[in-house]
Image (cartoon, rainbow, N blue to C red; front, side, top):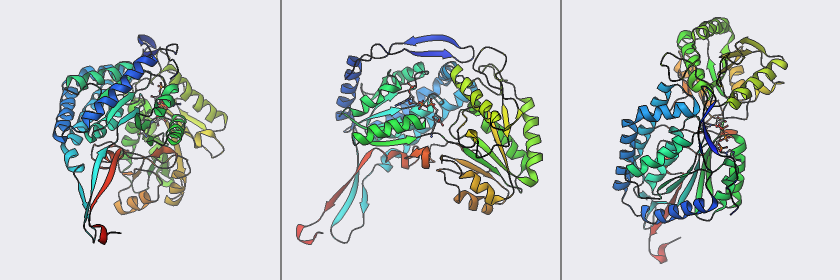
Amino acid sequence: MKTMEHLSPIKTVNPFNNQVVKEFDVMTSEELEAIIARADDAFQSWKKTPLSQRAKLLHKVASIMRNRKEELGKLATLEMGKLLRESIGEVEISANIFDYYADNGEKLLADQPLETPIGSAFISYEPIGVLLSVQPWNFPFYQITRSAAPNIMAGNTILLKHASNVPQCAAIMEKIFLEAGAPKGVYNNLFVPGSKVDVIVADKRIKGVSLTGSELAGGSIASAAGKYVKKSTLELGGSDTFIVLDDANIDEAVDAAVYGRMWNAGQVCVSPKRIIVEKSIADVFLKKVQAKFTTLKVGDPMDPTTDVAPLSSEKAAQDVIAQVEQAVKEGAQLLYGGHRVDCPGAFVEPTILTDIKPSMAAYFEEIFGPVFMFYIVKDEREAIALANATDFGLGGSVFSSNEKRAVNIARQIDTGMVYINHVTGIAPELPFGGTKNSGYGREQSIAGIYEFVNSKLIRITEAKNSY
Ligand code: NAP
């Protein structure tokens, strides 16, 4: 394995003021080797640990997280800038996901009998080994949880490679697992850069890899996983639509769109990035959105009165501004905002872009910041066509007072999730994931626990009767 000693350090930079808070050394090749060996060793006993004991560990992790939610929340806000109340909410939902798999894992992983005319047969769900989990910064605790909770319940062991800008959140989760009683090696934090992930995927002891992140990282990880024949799941970007039909409750739709798009300063994979409104209500809808925008307070994410946080980094803010400027250069109208906020920190004004055409990059791109891309359509057919005119296929929403009409439209949207009268959300028992270039595989829910298990057939029959 190549040496990694000379790569740039992993840092906490507070996006509220862009000050460096703390730096961490990238792990040496020897340190990494020792961690992989420890995770592989731990797997040999963890796979035989009774499900009830695995569940006990996950419940304990959940309870520690709940008890320390303020402290953990502050850490997330410090490192990637989201509103403190959102950070605390994220810790709570993460604890709920740990509890969900602790409560349901035993039932979900029990042998499943199969109907067969000759003899008997069943599926035995067996863990496969050490998994690499590569995660982004936008939900520093929830993202870790989505892969760790089901897989540790299933008997796998985890190597977490978190985003390089949230090292303290990454490190504290390993400590929480140890404090909860996890045997050494069951859950391991790696301080390595994204560019080195391929080398880890290639290691024979790694049996699977899950990534949540960009298409670029997804393509790179999927190629490495393919080359070395490893199972992978990818949760990538999205450019979710938020369709508002002429029979929708406009005020509720406006509230949901603004809240949803300003959540995490717009840096949510399932944020409503493309707002699509039927013509007859478009003017009213847009005026109400603008009025709401004027009330939004952009500022200190630790301050409970703030509505819009800074972006995760100076580069993230510059990238969003560059996308907005490009759209305007190509002919889009800037109806609101569109600039940096005049203060230190990675701030971008809440922004509304209209008149976006297929000739513009913005029509196809994901904008990962507080930017509404507003479209007017003449009818629901046009709304569906526009919703599907993207390579992404993650989530989406349809707002209507006619449930049947909304569900009919939901069925025609090519995404992994559609919410009616709600922004795409998160719940432990509901699957999360996409289609098209938004990736493959599912996390959370029943589906999430079967991604990295060997669904082994065991058949009992006599040789003379078999086929
Ligand atoms: P990113 O650059 O792809 O980073 C995500 C993770 O991948 C980080 O740990 C990063 O490490 C690592 N990484 C980067 N380049 C890599 C490579 N070539 N090979 C292997 N690993 C690599 O993503 P981001 O831009 O920070 O995150 C935002 C994206 O994630 C958005 O597109 C968003 O929509 C998507 N996302 C999707 C979901 C979902 O559930 N579908 C949820 C949240 C976010 P370093 O930090 O060290 O570079």
